[in-house]
Image (cartoon, rainbow, N blue to C red; front, side):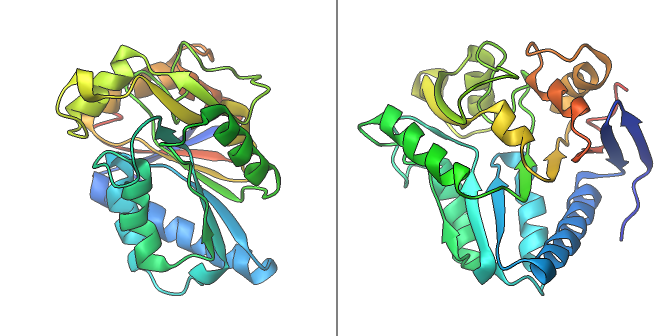
Length: 256
């Protein structure tokens, strides 16, 4: 197991810093692998809530490469999806997860958010019922440059949100990030609305693993760990979650 170069707590949140994104990804994959094996020794099925984005790619590749997980006993959900794009759109999170996860491991079930539904409120209700009927054993997260978790941007994040899944309008920082990471050609192409699992539903997961590597995350990591716990930086709520660990590389930790 690759050891972190630094490990510390901020409030209840464990923070681990690695020498590189690759070392971070490989270590988190092994930690996840052991956690899943232990759960599968104790229970029939395991439910995972998956994130997308560039921060997850190397980690998912490393996790899937490890043997010994019975994926046929694992049920998968995902955190968010754009409203109005099809499942084969290059930026679709369904496509990302289908190609990077489902087709490689063949889980027992993968419940997708139907981004191209004609009835988005009904889709929120459908996905809510699925989550209510399946306690989440493990949630993966990334952090947006505006501090969002999933699509809970500062303007719509609610730490006491009564909803489990909701439709939100994306802010311009979030939409520009999607352009900067090459998922869309320009800002006009990025959908204005998206589905997201809410903050309380995320925090209800039994274990949370958050990956935030790369220099472009350094400022938001500093804000998350040194500022107030507030919806101005939705990810700051992780500091109140003893079941959560934030994994960084030296670049994203460079301002600490």
